[in-house]
Length: 296
Image (cartoon, rainbow, N blue to C red; front, side, top):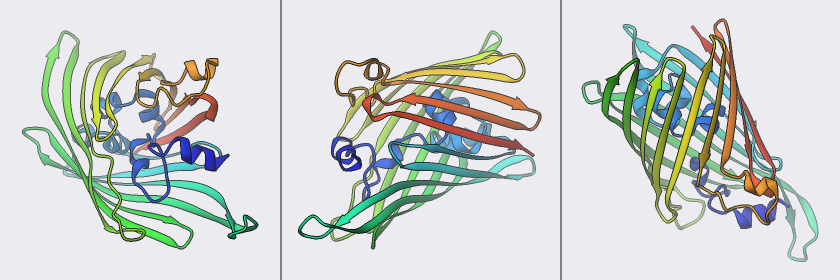
């Protein structure tokens, strides 16, 4: 079954490429999509928009979730402050690709092997005046006895912000995944999924909402709409819809109809914040993630 998925979804995750950078790693990103990078205050928002470093609070964060069959992914992020101002955030993302069957030239099973993708990122402010932030990541991919190493940068710019009655209107432009493969698996260097993102949104005391348009090289233009609601002091709920990979389903079942929708729910427990997201993925199953954040 995994071989079938890798054939049908080469643009979504595949050992030996950097397409895994397009998938959400945190539950909040899964549930709120690019809106999370516009108003998010924790380190995982930097995976979405490096300019969110200007909103960052003293939060240690980690998350884990399944991703198709026996694939798993997760992250960890930790901010560093200088004189109460965000100075640097360090984040790591990983995707475990599961086990693959190894066969000989006659198709006989002779063993198993696995693969993984790991990235280590450093995120920092470039211009406090113009609200420009950047991220630099080193990436390592491995499958069986093969490996590759790459590097990339992402830049975010909160280019327009205006206070409105009891709220805030903000716009951001992001260039993501501008990278270069230093050491390829073999001879040909893999390409990075370069993406240009616009996101605009409104933030009020009880809710946030916004839209996003993004263009991925070789894939085209897509759109998102997101809504995040604070229910009292401790409960948060979210729902979003994206056109990206909307047509991966096969057939007309209710599971395929729900493709593109994601939801989430979070709860504050003193200094601890738990957030869970659910994303139906057509006939390929469901994606569940949970994050835990600690304010220090």
